[in-house]
Image 1 (cartoon, each protein chain N blue to C red):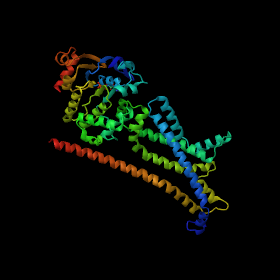
Image 2 (cartoon, each protein chain N blue to C red):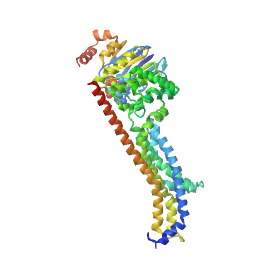
Image 3 (cartoon, rainbow over the protein chains, first blue to last red):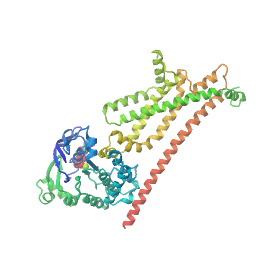
Length: 241
Length: 245
Ligand SMILES: Nc1ncnc2c1ncn2[C@@H]1O[C@H](COP(=O)(O)OP(=O)(O)O)[C@@H](O)[C@H]1O
Ligand SMILES: [Mg+2]
């Protein structure tokens, strides 16, 4: 479904990704963890070309992403949920959910709104359809952002630290929605520090440090007997926290 | 005899009212088409400046810097005489439309650039991540948010353009200021300085004041809306907290 092949990314002189190779299968739930600044965001952003790799290739559904085809490939395959929600503040919740289906996927207003209300039910916010995003709490905004990602019926959803900007008491409501989603056949790539979520949902966990994938494996492997010291150190810190 | 209170002077202005009407008409049509041109140029060069493409940014920068750092009078003369001497004269009004449009376009481009750059990068990324192309992203997501930042300074530029139609004087003008000047210095009409300039000024004021008033009212309205949304946000969150307790 997603394949990164020898991906390097530099920002000026700074080498942020150094030969990242990763394959995500259809329907797989991949969780990426690692210390801050290790290149997790850059990696996930290479998957939808918000960052274009300095060298190396990204394949979506077997098709190589290029500067030319990225808009179409992304439109047809991928959505993203951001740390800062990034809802469109000048539109109601309903409009946030229907704009892409109507303008990009040629759905009628009626079809798009039916779809929107369906996914508002999924995230439990039907009654907020006519509210503006700034009137919602962070947790509610993020649930709307997830509904927006679902409304384009993408097979792949990327999550970059979806709960890191939330007040502690609203984190769980967002995680609950994501756990619910994980039961569907959607390919999910999730950067997170929520180890409970990772353990419960991940088919596979990837650990990054210094712009490289240091270790990968299933949750049992990761939490019971990780190989590298850096993973042990990291987990020690996170769990103590 | 040319005093403000001279009935004869006022009478003279009234007699030659068609001169003022003609000046007004020329000023208004120069301004109208000049504004259209300025808008088109402003949007094109403003978008180029925020496209992230180096060559486009560079071209936009060159346009803005040249236009903003030379006098509009010079640009106007340059266009008029360069064309006149190459036997392609396009007339005073058209020269005015083009030179004022190009001049104001540079300021419009800056206004639009600033309006776009004020939108958080997350908005661009969210739109890209949904598969909006550049034009769609601007049209549906970015510009509707920029418009409230752009509109007030843009109206100020429109008002400046209207006032700058007086530049046509230097190429033999047909605008309101030029005709007023010929009126007060004319052999048959001369003398009624104060009334003529008062009438001329009033005509400008009548056009420009509603525009600036509109801009400031709009700005105040948007500020109020923002406050209302923030207020609503606070109350809903507090209600939420209260409900949880
Ligand atoms: N747009 C950018 N320009 C310059 N440096 C960047 C940019 N984005 C990320 N970086 C740098 O790349 C490194 C990796 O960042 P990131 O991928 O965001 O890490 P993580 O998500 O794991 O915290 C950091 O050192 C960060 O400062
Ligand atoms: Mg990050």
